[in-house]
Length: 388
Image (cartoon, rainbow, N blue to C red; front, side):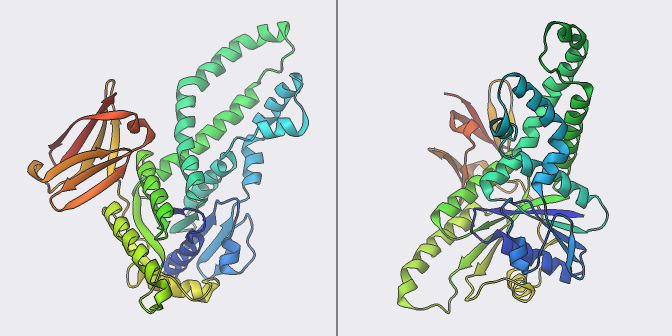
């Protein structure tokens, strides 16, 4: 069973790549499901068929689903929302204003992860391709489970025990609506469901992310940041698809400058994502929608390779925290210490190994620190950061 998260900046063609990947896998015999968690669904447009909240078979062996995030929100958040509404009403906040306060950014997409897990463990599919929202929303979506996990581990169960003991007393001295056990049951159910989804998504043997980029400066920069943060949150990346590369047949002088610009970006992409396969997809002269065109796109993208088993999720580095320092650990199994140079420039760290150089965009937590030292031991380069 594999889950493939396809993400990228809005407009780079991730829905098309997702659809072509799922179709290619289905043609190879995988029982496949493609799921859209993007509130602005475009999966239906890609295949040219109407899709809804329930999976629909669109070609033999391939089902598609556009998750109704509002429906999931109501299902999981309804009891908790009613409690919060009662508190707001008690405080004089009513109507639309109160409703808006009760839906936090990213919450509806978060509950979509629960549906992804349910489909993945149903036994009905060998592959679930997730057409994710644009990268900013995806990163928020994938980081929220960890934040919620901290809250429930540190706070929730203690608060529940305290409230159970204090509720009889508080109910006699205040008319503030107090949460009952049903509210805590609902919250625990939400946490448990999200934690199970998180566990599945963090398993590199099951789940990996595939990034879609265009050879454009802003898109490449965002993809590099996404690569860093996916790794930081523990998600494995198995490949990068560079979409809309000018083909060689386009030789009009008008595009000469564009070709030169793209060449520079393509070189940077190869350098930045040297740990994973980088696939190129040319700019087509037609809209790649509908089963026939998507199948052709998938064939050109993957060729003879299997879009599922030929790509293995990797984490190029990991961040380890201790009391006084934070360490960035990078696997360099074949390098010697005399071959390595480490340099920091602003928000990036450059690691040079022999003739090759890699650059890493630092997460915010490391940008506020400075490098104390770097050392190579047992094939792992450790870069230690300390407070300025």
